[in-house]
Image 1 (cartoon, rainbow over the protein chains, first blue to last red):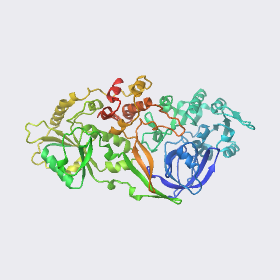
Image 2: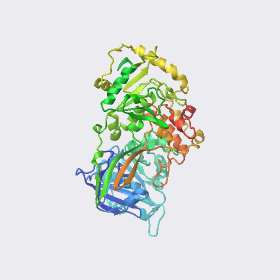
Image 3: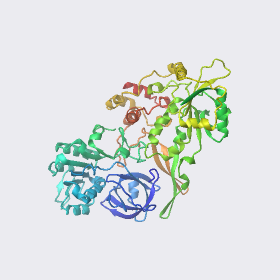
Image 4: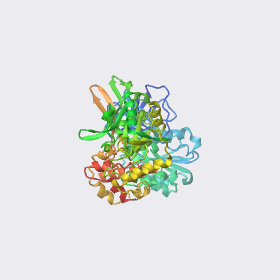
Length: 274
Length: 354
């Protein structure tokens, strides 16, 4: 891997997920070795001639042949990405960053709390724990989306749910006709979620404000600060701790994160405009 | 490592030999209406004990703009320019001669950033070929405060070889204390033998210290009073929400000159350019003072105004970097104060929380 120079990947499949989110599946042009990563790591994705952005890997860490990214069309680069199709080329640098603590979580219950597109960086965790099911206790996914149409990976969530060895609870901010599930923010699901607070690792990804309230609820349930993990976001350029854009106090989110335990960043997390 | 006393003319002879052997030599030099480190072709172009240049030599190691990728887009294919295949042999040997200790010290901060894993190959290819010959400061400016960040007019930090002029007894033969600091410095002397035979006076450690103490005390009074900016970094973080920041930051208009003239500011942007069929990805200097530095695609900006941006600059230099690396990310050159259009004084700001 050359950390500063992108290598070319070709799009094998373009999947429209919801109205504004999509998944691309990529295969390396230059190498046959496949792409290995750990759940929670990200790549710098370069749209030639347009620009480069960090996007977490949303695929299965056990399938190294295909590299999967899911994102929402928001900025200049993602809006261009949304126009890509099968056969197009993108540049990839990575994988970068510290992963989710799936190894440390062995023997524990796992609570995954995701908001919106925040489910994408956590999907590799779900794949990993389901493939190594015997090493973990209860697995609970609490997922909040804006509306039922905005639920990401809906079919796959239904498939996971049918396994019966994972609890999936979904809530939406705004319901539509025909929705019989939960309505309300994802934090309302925490008090009744079936996990043992003494032996639980929580992994959270969503907007900062959602993560803040989720942490409060989890601590109320008795989780230790060192058992709660979040993934942070900042503008990034280099992805490897040089360019300074993602500096977060003493930490560089690209290099020291993006996954942090709440204990590590508690003193930074509450700071406004850091 | 090694130290001796050498006459000035011998140093100049040596440098002129280096010049003849196709080594690039940069020295502090006045160019039209500004001064910076400029390449010289002959020894006659060298003026010793110049005023400190307005720009540091940062751009030699970390250019203001630099191509990191060049390519053309063909049908379903991206063709990259293989000439940009960087390694240490692709750069020429370069000597930076006569740099003041503040600029030399900046190398240590730059190395901490760019030579940490996974190493910036663009920086390393240059650094490996750059030799720094520092010269004791004889022209301090009113904004200087190097003694407050753990340095001095004779500090050898960052230099491969360091020269201190001796207070001459006569005008005829000016002499220098030559200290060889690094193996790189040794290498320079080995390849191009410095003519030391005649004046190879043995010198003791005490004598070296005495020469430097004397030199320092001569100029110390010309710079800002010594304070300790290397300690108590926590006091800055503790005052994160101080009302002072508002007063300090409100007049900043984010021009970024402080970062551009700073020898240790390392933030960069990656920008795409296009010219007649060819795309370029450039590594350009950036500044945490710019409004879009932290701007997210969503429109959210974690540091929404100049108040937070200026605070970030100060905290990075004196708290975050110091906590991580054990030194300030500031060499006390005072350039940012000198060039700030609203006269924001870094020394004064840092002094508020000691």
